Image 1 (cartoon, rainbow, N blue to C red):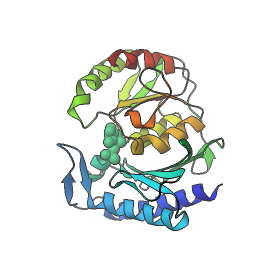
Image 2: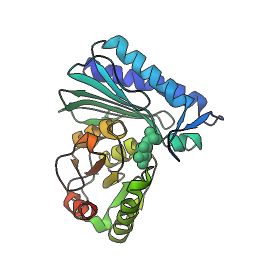
Image 3: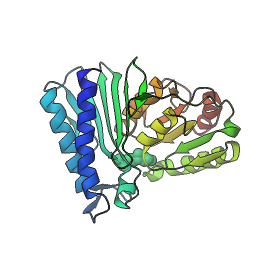
Image 4: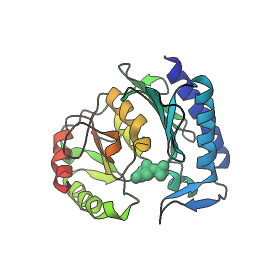
Length: 257
Ligand code: IPD
């Protein structure tokens, strides 16, 4: 295990303690948009992750959900969502995670997604496979969309909503079922371990999906844009699947492009 992965796991565990301690208590909630919210716990979790990683790697930059870009302009940057699934968290729903990725020269090299309530720690390193609590994980082998369980997210921004609801309708009619968990990081990891067969979402940010994308890729999955083109983390859309159903998913997502 690289020192970077080791430290990312450590940072996610320390931030996970912060999240666990306040879970279920009443929180000071601020609104970033009509329904997009942030709590003091998001901010504290982010400070914790950044402190641990900055101490260990002072020359690496950061892109975080609550503070944006910071740190030095180097080839390496951490991409962090200190609490992915904030809405769930504020409703005491135990589906949320700390998500930490490292990008080096534009390529994802480390990914960690940790749910401190379930204790599920997903981790991956480029070329090294993906694990759940230390055990290798792999995507499902389901080849038919009709038999596939799909997960998605409903965007906060109204401009993405009509397309998202149209797609929901199409996937509900053509798959085994569609779920909406409220944490894109967990959606991708649960696809990586075969609980789901595919994930799609538009309106997401790179910090929501960076770590989960590497974990899914390393578990044997396939990633792309809505048109099937190479995934661009900044493009605010993602299709991730087990591989065999990818083209069937893209056939649907490409219709809303
Ligand atoms: C959100 C979650 C959700 C997704 C939203 C994200 P946040 O992240 O990942 O599943 O549908 O697009 O913004 O705000 O809880 O960190």
